[in-house]
Image (tube, one colour):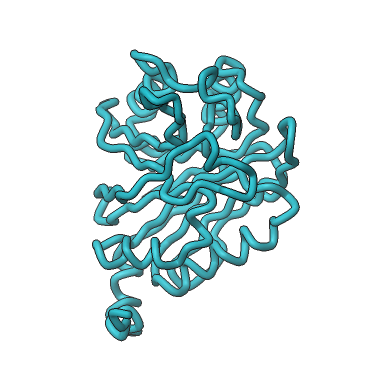
Length: 255
């Protein structure tokens, strides 16, 4: 089945401009019904600490957009957005929609990025999200979560074999990004999709390098530094066969 990762220059706190860019990129991409389309962290605003300005209102503009894309392409769609709690703090989340446009789940970033002050504005989540996609058990995470292998082990123990990681990962740590994506795929014997952005915001520059990595750590697609949607076909039977042959996950110890 087809995975699609959309990488673009997110216009700062400009929803309509970002919606337009996504629609344009998708219109230029061959998309099979039933695909999984993945957008970056805070896909409609950029990685902003202006919670009051970018948080979703009711009804949610970003969620409505995701639902429309899902229905239009008869595909699953996943993208990052922000909600706000009554105490004013933000929640850095992602939402998932099925091909009918029905919302099927939310995930709240478990590890907010203290190094950049994200913890001053956003609350960390505690739970994970799992959903089924053509035989895969998908467990999505957000950016800084990538640095915490124990979180991926938690997903594996719950049955996950496909990990989307949506991000706003700065260019200064690009080697960490590509290395960790491959590591998470190899050690968990799972498909990993890293979805980053390009361009810059008021604080950071972004080099992209969105990647689709198979269960052996082999790169199936890489957007490099271009504004584009990358695509790869994956088959859960190959993941299952490798896990059955090379039983590393069965050898885990309950430390």
